[in-house]
Length: 119
Image 1 (cartoon, rainbow, N blue to C red):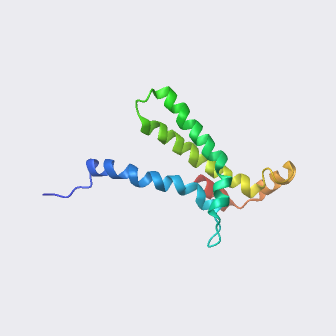
Image 2 (tube, helix red, strand yellow):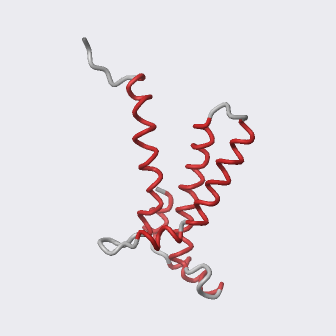
Image 3 (cartoon, rainbow, N blue to C red):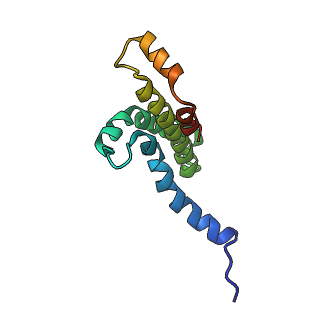
């Protein structure tokens, strides 16, 4: 027989492989190389997690249980966006410095930080 990596195989394997990978993406920018503190990054991402959970539950209300994967997909999208915004907020000092200082820090962030957030 033939070995195929077409639709049946792809459909069955893509989701289970990508779901955990995408779930850990927001941790990357928050962890320093070889010195990263996963617990501290987890604490910083709690608001992003709460938003993602709210998105899953809200989507679940509107789709009437038709597709749990749709709600998970929306929650994952919110998780990724909120995680990227969390990184920008942490690096610009939101909540720890005066608003004027925070805006200066935000404006002074290297373009690579914004590239990381967009990626």
